[in-house]
Amino acid sequence: GEDVEQSLFLSVREGDSSVINCTYTDSSSTYLYWYKQEPGAGLQLLTYIFSNMDMKQDQRLTVLLNKKDKHLSLRIADTQTGDSAIYFCAESIPLDSNYQLIWGAGTKLIIKP
Amino acid sequence: NAGVTQTPKFRVLKTGQSMTLLCAQDMNHEYMYWYRQDPGMGLRLIHYSVGEGTTAKGEVPDGYNVSRLKKQNFLLGLESAAPSQTSVYFCASSYQAGLAGVTDTQYFGPGTRLTVL
Image (cartoon, each protein chain N blue to C red):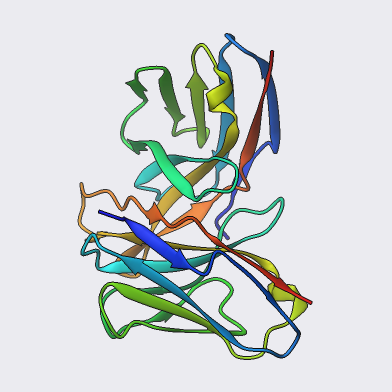
């Protein structure tokens, strides 16, 4: 079935770039998403990319999509302590006449001083 | 705009007890969802609704029931709680018109932490 995989943890130093990776299996995905979950809170949409794009940049965030390898990454430049959170990758795939989100398990980003 | 709200925030149940989780959204979204989040796993869809009066099963529907009597509310019921239902439950909503070029961004509530003893 459909699957989205992410590493469970990533540790980076404050000020460095963080790169969170995600692989997916369903080639019919339309949109791919990155959501952020801060401790004790719900998920918030961070950014998304349409499946026919290779890259999207939004301030400190850069999303890269390699559709051939089914690989999505999120780069956070100049990582700050406020970026500490769990980052979820999700792909949107057709389901009957609707769409369904398939979620990764989340990558916990740990910031070292 | 409150967005998506959930009540209660926390709850402890004994095995066999029942309860209802309430989700409300004020964005006039057609689609609403209930997920559960367990450690080391992605969100798993329990049930969803594509509009008032409709519900459909998701990936893990067993042991749960839902109702969408009003467009803005989506209720999740546990008739006889089991320890395996200990989890964090998230409600979400979206426009999700299902049309090409329209994103199906989901907006999440803050979650309900449920413990079943």
